[in-house]
Image (cartoon, rainbow, N blue to C red; front, top):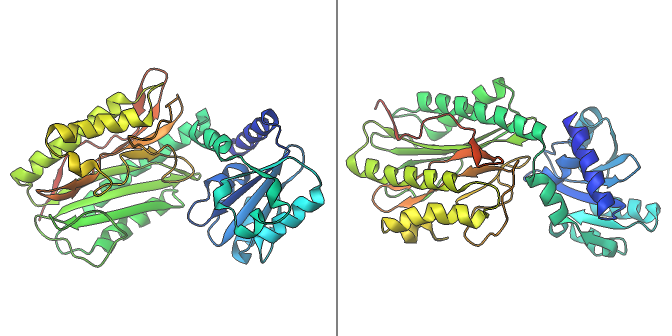
Length: 365
């Protein structure tokens, strides 16, 4: 039902924009544009969905494994297994005749498609599809709420699994097993552990947790293709005074950012509210790109979607947008810390989806 609702919404937007055919690209890392139309989660290689306003959806894949899955999981699409998706789509567009055709995200398209005679007809519809991806339907928001509840539960597993001597990958394995057993087909997750020497998070390593470590994670399960994220920090053993002082800044920054989320404000306004807290405590250098990437971002069919929460992003927030607000960055006294909650923009402000307390957790050493 939700997949059909999305496809109808896309076709309606195409009609308004007078687009006859839409070319939507996806790969194993970022498949949200492709999935919005096809409801197919690509796992390998490259894929392109071609949506018209009246014909059956066409799905071009260069992975035999994905094509076999698509036959079962995308029954409404005509599946094309091709060695070169660019050539396959270009040939289909040539046969389709003189249609007004657009693509999203056009900058991701294989070079061979944009350089053909057919490719030259492709207008850039990235902004149009981005609007659909950012402005969620009610059923999309409901699915993200379910993913956020699972993220809370997953963090509970993470916290219970964290103890001195365990390797990072063992913690992540426990969380992955729990999430898969509870309906999550995917989870974007990174982790960090240590002290002042830790400047960020990464995929899990063989590093063993030690007493006094800050252990951080960004945990992002998906339900029905929709991701929700939580960011939290814990200490192996008792938190020291410096760690507690530092964490208080992050909590104040998160609360300031969430308080700023409401219709009509921009992503820049939210980022500025977070960053101003760090500036107040003389930590302004640590909200620059040298130490941190974003102050949050959109959530949906991709774990790190638009809008990015940065002081130079002027995207206005509207009801139905789903975001993670997270003032994650390096602290010069204690190392990298994270704290973030998933939210949905409402008519009057926002709804916080994460229920895990905003605490610097302590686990027995």
